[in-house]
Length: 152
Length: 373
Image (cartoon, rainbow over all chains, first blue to last red):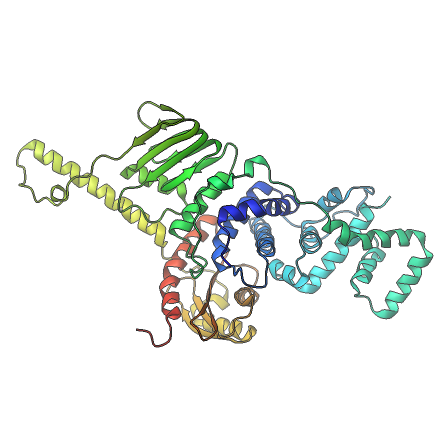
């Protein structure tokens, strides 16, 4: 089964990459650029006959790219990604998108990549370079915080 | 958020011990507020999965049928992304950048669909419609158009002269040379600008009778300068393609030092079942390890990469080639892995290019069937 051309992949999965970047990156346009660069570079290593769907593979690449970007910014002291909420959520009644946006970035990456894009927790742990237990903890905290923010 | 909310999430995932789960279920049944929280948490997976994808903004959209594309060969190593695929990627990424779409095209062909600005060697094309722009660099400069530094290549190509063709299929275009007057083009028109005719080989090689007058000497001096420029351009281009040898960092994790890297790589091979370490190359920084598997399971390359990262820690950037070949006796996996502390983007790209230059011949050698000449 031949791989689609880069232009076909861009057309078919542009919304996927953009949506991931829009939800998970502070600068989604630059992030999308980075993701596509990695996708195009990594395309020769993708096996279309393998078990992973191209969309899943692209989602993993996008996730790893965003993790790397966050790590680089941390290394340069430009950003600290808190793994905690600065304060308990105090704005109940938010819609889901707004509530997601208020989560700490590491929690948001886990809940979005797991529930929205269907990645396994072990796969997420590998991309985040943290133990699976840490990913589970972030998932439970994220779901708990979302439940509060979505409440009456 | 209370501890109860997190426990409700664990209950949803089936991670609570049976006695704690039963106790929490009883509290949920008795406490209306907790019941509402449970309903919200248990509804989250479905609500999140139903969130729609969003179309990228216009500034990130590309008319896919107008882009030059090239399918990369499947057996190429991951960072062996030179030439055709890189050119396609360069144009693609450039178009993705900002509104109006801007492309730095140093070689090859691109067709716009709408308003776009195409930077070409020696000028720019202000396109408005379906405009085909072709850039043909001079012979000898056709390698190494890379996604990494398109503008640098652009300047090099401009210095040496390139042939530019602008064909207006629909709409209009304006070719604005760096020197000279702009040229307005409408539908159906084509504009071509080319380099000065190259001197005949016998002229370049000096086979003609050596002139003795001042004018003849001046002409020869001009030829020497032109050749020196071409030589400098070609050397710069070559360095850009091959990367430059990297100095060993003063501070480098012990696991990555040449005296310890083989041990690190052996640990990686042990961590991924069915994997053998077959070669280590520490001639230059960073060291590269080559792994082999007779039964590469799906994700084998990724497992290697993860094991290497785990062995070294978070501060490493991993470069990897991964090839799975089948010569008729079953699949065989080969992978080259290198890791280096995070570097600035330009430095990292240079390391990647240098790794490509180093690793490609080794991978080719390792990919040769056993016993092949």
